[in-house]
Image: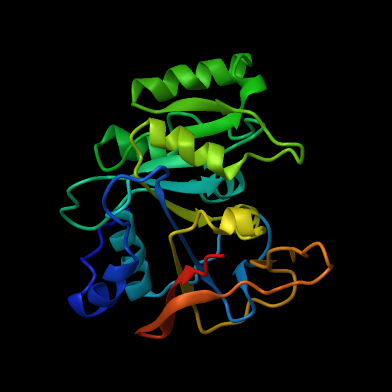
Length: 262
């Protein structure tokens, strides 16, 4: 993939307050970021790669990557997009670690995967793949793990919760133990909706940065719309962002904010 010019200062400056916070913290700083259409869709249909960001907001994504230790996506995104998950800014001084949530080990990653090819030539890093612990001894997973370890990646086993999902706090603690101090969550919809789905998980988010593209993807699109969480009295209080800033980036508009703490 071609390199990208650095984000112009006029756009980088207003983003600065939403970058990862420095200093010792129990958990990595988590930045949630994605691009969406006007009807809240991030892709045309499940498994379909859909480009929404314009040139400037795309440069913003790589600018953000340069400030994070790791980037996280779900397995569906990895399978559909075969992403490099690196920072393509010309002269980038460091590269984030790709992290893939793959509970059942369905991503049949090989040496020809773009993320591995990128790592081979020194333009990125090999991924950490988080998998249900019970699959760590699977023969296919063992073989893939040997390949990943050649390039500095590996599988990480975590237990699933009662809903068959990874616990977000456990994910962050596991990454923290490996030296990850900042994590950028980019998608897909299942990952985003799960992270936004409860007050407990929302409290783990340090910054939210969303690109709005001036288009509608129509019915059938994959949307970001977390389930409502009702209190003990059956009431629903819609979560809101605070410290909100809107940044026009050519035809796109970028929303920055922080989750309101309770």
